[in-house]
Every structure is written in C-alpha cells, then in structure tokens.
Length: 501
Image (cartoon, rainbow, N blue to C red; front, top):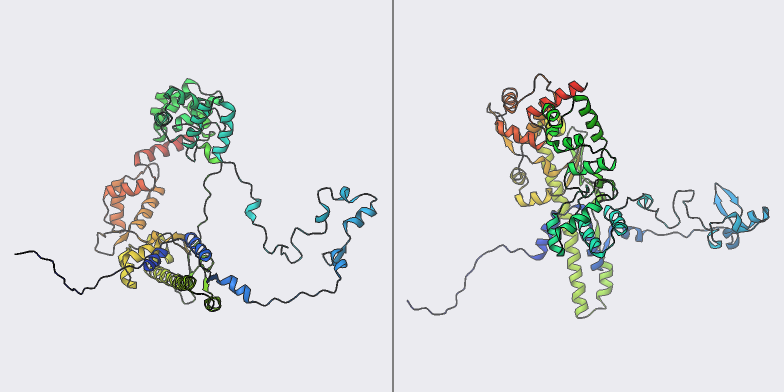
C-alpha cells in the first residue's frame, strides 16, 4: 500500500479549560488571606474594579458641619467635657514663665493640636492607630547573634563562617547543618569551622549552636559550673530517662536515688530550646470561613464569614464615560478590563456558593459529631460529599483546603471531618478512625498502675464493647500517632510518679 498525503475532516468533542476557568478553579483552594491578596492585586491592575465598602462610602452624602464660632475663637479653644480650656500662652502668663517651660516636649505648632481621641472616641486622622504599633517586638535571634559575633571574632574569615553557622540555626537555636558542608562551601578547613563554632557556643542565650539536646543542656550546665562527671553521664543516657528506666539510669550514672532526683530537678530548670525566646515567624490567627450555629428548629445554620469575603463591584458608570473617549488599543484594554471585572465578581460569588454547599453537606453528615462529640464522628470521604452535592471530588478537595469551620464543638479545619472507615465486627455501621483514636486515648487515660493496657488488650476491649474490628498493629499506629508511649514505658512512668509522691 502506497503512502501519500491527504486531507481528512473529523468532528469530535473535547473538554478545554480556558485560562479564566483554570483561574476560577484556583480561586476555590485559596485561603482568605491568599484570596484577599489576589483581589488587592486585581484592584490595582483593573481601573473598573472597586471595593463595595468604598463605593458605599462614596455614595453617602456628606453634610457640611456648621459652627457659630469664628476662626480665631475656634483656634483658641479645645473642647473637653464641655468646658473651655485656656491656651498654652495664657497658662504661661499666669505662671509668669515661658511656654517652653510649661510644655517642654511640645513644639509651638503642636500646642493647639489634639493627638488623641475626642469625646466621641474618634481620632483626628479618621482611623485609630493600629494596636500592633504599640506591641513590643522581640529581637530576632540572627540579629542578636550577629552582633555578638562581630565582637567575638577578629578576622573576616571567621565572621563569614559565623554568618553561615547562624543561618543554619533552626527556630529552637539548634544547628541544623553539617560542619563539613559549611567547610566545603567556603573552601576552608573543618578545624576552622569547629573553632568558630566553639566560640559562638558561648554566646547569649547559652545553649545555642548545639547539635543535640544533650549538648544544649551541657552548654548551660557548663556555664553554671555544674557539668561534673556524674552529670555528664546522666546527659549521655538521656534515652534511658526518656524511657523512664530508673533502675538502668541509676546503674549508668552511678549514684543513689536521692542524687538522681536532685540532678533531674536541675535539668528541669534548664531551657532545652533557647532560641524560642526570640522573634521567629509570626503566628497567624486562624479565622473561620464558615460559622455553624444551632437553629431555633433544632437544626444547624450555616453562615459564611462576611469579614473575610472580599467584595468588589464593577464601576459601569466609569466604563460608560471613558469608553466614549477611547479608541484603538485603549478601547481594547478597557474591554478586557470589563471582561476581567465581570469574571472576578462572578467567580467570587460562585466560590462563596460552593463553599456554603460543601459546608452544609459536611454538617448534615456529621450531625452526630456536632450534637454528641468526637465519639460520634462518622467516616466520610470526598466521594461521599461529592455525590450528594453533584460535584467532582477534586472540587470538594479544593473547597475544603485551607478552610476552617467554627462549630459549637470548636474550630476545625474542613479536612478534619474526612476520616477513613474501620469495619464493625458485629455487622453494624463503620466507625471513624478519629473516633477510634479518641476511644483509645480515653482507655489509656483511665488505666491505673496495676492495670496497664497493652495494645492487644485495647484492641480486644474495642471489639467487645463497641464492635470495632481493629488489629493490634492499628492500635499501635494510632497510639504512636498521638505520641502515647508503649505499655512498658507507661508502667515505668506511673511507678516513678508513685515513688516520687
């Protein structure tokens, strides 16, 4: 069969994602902070967009304020509590002195001005000053250490090594980089890096630049002249202390029980994370996107948090005025701005409706949790919610990402309500993995020193009492995920607490 070129016409259907559709999908998974930043950028870029609150303020008529006072009389009086207060010059004349002696910290131009709030509590500039401006900020750990390094180290080479060591610290003040990597990067000897590290380990706060917890505590003990051989042996066996293996710890340290208790009390007075006393990444307050409240009819009311929803309007009046005077590229630019503005307002409205729809379905399926608590949390997947509201799973996943829901039970991320299912041994309904974790914690918290529950025992109790078919290794995985030690370590902990009491 000979090969030859030819033309063919085929008709087919395909789904194409336009750039605007892709951007609308992206808006779903943005948090309220990210969405606010995106909207602010659009407001700067698009002259046809404006915030709804600013538009409402501009539409309100302003009435002129009338006063019966003349200009000179108004300038010479400050109203406070309905009484007239004399000017600074009058006070100075009465005291037979100058104005500078009466108000030494004020300039003559400031004496007739008020910098605080008036009788109604409003400020002269319009908005009250931000309270964050009055909060004392803590110094940064890097800045604090760089200042000390400049005084401790003499050569530029040592200071450059110190800068790389400071940049390698984590928030707790521990050195998170290898010394060999710094030596290779700077092309210097490892001994030089170790010498600079030794000098920096004497900086304030004591304990920074340590590689391990034991080294951090040793630096602080050495600074207090308390690092004797017995204390060093205790630091070398911190793993036994973590396991609460007191007999093994007494043997390794070589002391009696009373001396060991004294040394442990001294360790408790140290700071294993000295870097946390300094400024780090600011903590962002979690703001709920959805409020869930009890309704009068016994159901639940779902309400979006309007404070975090950016509201924008399309200024069509401005568009009508400007479009009459534009031609060519300017008219094309204006048309693009109008299309983008219409798309953004529609996308924000669609985003709000989608979040409300998903949140309502989550509340409907997790009614038992909201009414009775975590023990009644049902297993729920993205597919279960998507099928009920007739959306795709990926859409539900984007909606629940970085979104928080304020409920009568507390503030939860929407992802919290999606948990895997654990089969029931008696043929009943499945159990939520989070509810199983909660029950495991309850059983462990209620155990006594004479009745420490093993993972096998916990699995058997769950199977008999609640019909939860869970294996021992699953109980161990959930227990370790909640940072609960094994039954052996828990028994040692309770014995040590009983002996100390």
